[in-house]
Image (tube, rainbow, N blue to C red; front, side, top):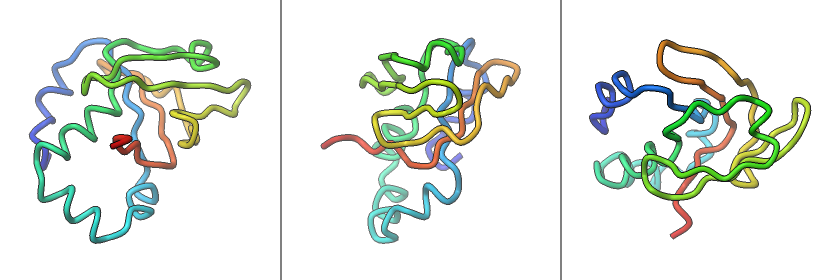
Amino acid sequence: TKAGLVDTLNSAKNITVFAPTNDAFNKIPKAQLDKVLADKAMLTKILTGHVVGEKIAPAKLADGSYETLAKNKLTTSGSGEDYTVDGSAKVVCGNVQTANATVYIIDTVLLPKS
């Protein structure tokens, strides 16, 4: 809501969202998190960096590379029930279907490399 993305994400078709848990946000130092929350452009970049413009089935998570809505690359790897996103975020729950998206819950916020 703070980034103004609710309508954008609700109206998008066939997307995949890698949604961090509340605990994932709690891993970010408070000063850094407060700075991000105060910078709408940065917040938007971070949040859209968790969204891919296509539905990704679990089988495609084994070894994938996808462009996010933030225009950066996101990689997935793993097998069985053990998958990671960008080499560090673990998928804790996945393949949740919503009206317009496939959702995977991850344990780490994906922050830009720079």
